[in-house]
Length: 261
Image (cartoon, rainbow, N blue to C red):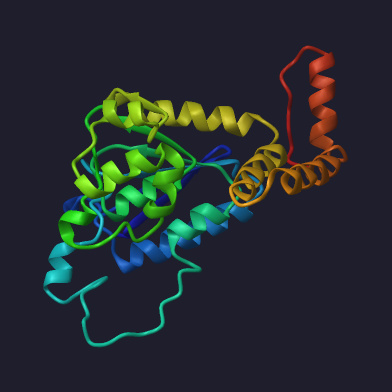
């Protein structure tokens, strides 16, 4: 069976990390397929939101340390250096795509799984889950986005607390620190994630994607340059059928029916 399960439910795509016997520890196949699916769904006009979660008791246990210690899998070979590109790794792809991604953290998110969750746009967390940023306890760094996301999400001091001390983070603490959007009762996690995804999917997809894209660019632009780019995007959206539908539905006091055109 594949290390990644994929399905579509209306305008929502669901991706499930699928190594439950290893708490969804990452494999090369999982990374390759996850990156491919994210790009595929970003290009699919019928997909307006993606939910990423894990099968079984865990979200993602990070690097498979058993395989690594045995000289197999990711990080298992110490036979010399080679060129490594970050262009297609899933955490970079998550940052690059415009389709919103909700992370349904159903269980422990450790190491790479922690970074993977941070790379999603919205995080809903089971009350049975935990975040485990244990990098400093393993002699490594948050290798897939954590060093970039954490200071931006929680500020410098809290990022240092998380990174240097490396303690597990409970759902309540994660919400308090701003690492997640909401703590959800475990049995309701997927239903609540689907409710959020369907609310996103009901809005104008061109507008939603543009908002995410502008949020991303705004992280590295000065204010005046960014407002110029916002205006250019707005002029394009004014010409869309969805903008006209938004106006009509408002005047006619009915829900809009957006087509992504």
